[in-house]
Amino acid sequence: TSCWEGAGGKHLPLLFTLACLALLGVRWARGRGAWRRDLGLGPHPRKAMDFAFGAFLGLLAMLAVFGVEWACGWLRPGPFDPSGPGNLDVLPAMAAVAFWEELRFRGIELAGLRSLLPTWAALALSSAAFGAAHALNANASWLSIAGNAADGLVYGYAFLASGAIWLPAGLHAAWNIVQGPILGLPVSGYAEGGLLHPVVSGPALLTGGAYGPEAGLLGLASRFLILALLWATLRTRCPNPLRGTAAKELPC
Image (cartoon, rainbow, N blue to C red; front, side, top):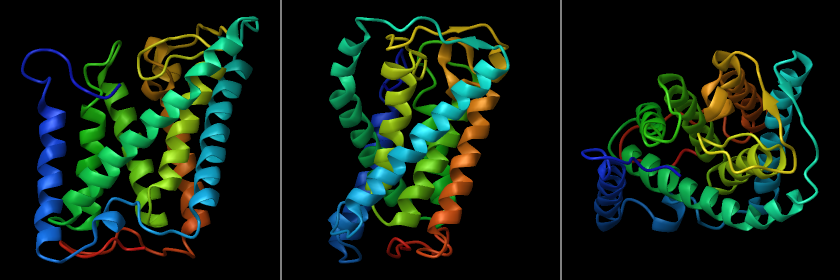
């Protein structure tokens, strides 16, 4: 989930998305871009490879978080749940939600902001908006908002450097699926269970506590690991994805 609840904030994320879509509409009306390319849905020779690479990074990062917590004694994996494979029924839905969020937050919001702002500023603002959109999730905190904003930074960089939505969509989907239905950790504040039933006893500042790894310093560090791997892998394809000024095409 990524919408605010409660009076006053309930509709703000949607209004922000619609405002960014309006910016894109103006851009398209002036003939300054193509809607499929701007949304990250245009022809792309590496769709499958980028999605698979993103999924690999998400899997790697979440297993690293889980493994470090286990090695440090902050987590016990718990028993394998014999009924757990039933939880895997939610995988297609979780993948679809991840794709929708990438289309919304990167394809519409980041691209829309970039039609008005320099790329680096659009990335920063869209990442902050992504963090704020999770502000009223269950068990949210200032650190969880910062963690989700860091998610937005990673997904946004992947979007810009790859030139399409497939890499961040694979990364986002794998992060959530491995975290929740497989390892049994809370996903953005919501615990639905998984194949494992871990018991987290380490400091919430490091593990994220009831919100999940997004609200912990260890999870935050994993975002920068992903960012470094993305930079190392994509720098030859797109040396500087943060270049550009207002109303120009996506950089790569």
